[in-house]
Image 1 (tube, rainbow, N blue to C red):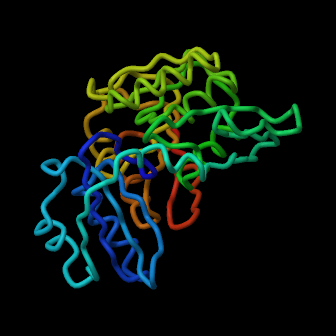
Image 2 (cartoon, rainbow, N blue to C red):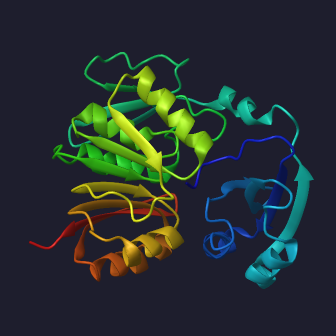
Length: 281
């Protein structure tokens, strides 16, 4: 998902800097090379897009330069210091999302719950890598979940630390199935579900096509959305699709329209987009 960080020994940080006006098309181009997503920060009048990985696992600098062409301002590859993977926890803050007359607070376990007991409290330990609810794509997904009445089973594709799956279970969907390709993220997700405690079953997303559920949330890069739209055996009746740049939303909506899902709502936040797609009656 777009706000993930890799976590392992001997990692490399690949920082790609572009001009602010080139940031969105550059990110779209790089997601073809980095389908797991990139961090995005503003620095010194440029936007830096950052990926982490083992030295041999990252795309070559030549491939990055070819993908970006003249949009590239700077490219830096540096070793990652040991212990970095949890240092960012010090900066985590609770995230409050309100929609449909309800509010959910996603917070690290060491942060306080909301003082209003009516607010749904969702403690989520992001582990070393996998999201704490603060990214725009996650917040928009939560809004769309809060606006829907729970209706049976829900499947979360690309679950990360489990924010969306855990929220769905707390809101009343059942059963909830969370699918994730990263084994370390699956461990984090299962630990968060057990600490809840909520009933969430976690499985490897590599078993595509994923199991069917009438409602699906999918916070995934564009390439995975298009792959799933083309290959999933049985589309859901309602799909919350996120992880998309605003310029990518139309193409993903069209891909799912070919499978019988029409666009019912579109959200935009900080250059990202989320879609609510539903089966035609």
